[in-house]
Length: 184
Image (cartoon, rainbow, N blue to C red):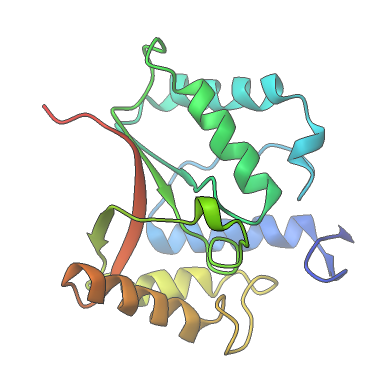
């Protein structure tokens, strides 16, 4: 158990990991990698250490698409990861994926007060057939889900998906900022 930035609440790392495993099982994800970095303190870890972990993932999985946090997020860990992904995915890296998309995180992306760098999506994915599965998976994170009108509530997640759907002519959508995309 530890102290988190979520208003001084305590959280249990083991429980959070179990919640993550349950959520990913619902989504059909087979391989998960966990690193023991401290929560909400990635800015205290040498940047090269984080970059090397990302490069290891790129080498081991050789993915075509990489999803990361958006650089505009309020959460410092999300900003650090975005920056480390950019470095790890330099074009000289032969394991670099052809597509890199930055996603938004409820109660992190929209809460930033940095008006010069707001999340501005330019790529949308139709999730109309999977929205219920998404909500069910996210609901596994008992310590993360809140009550409405919090944006990280089930209703908040649905509202954002409807809004992004409205922007892109889908019933429900997820929005991304393209960091890199290679079109053949």
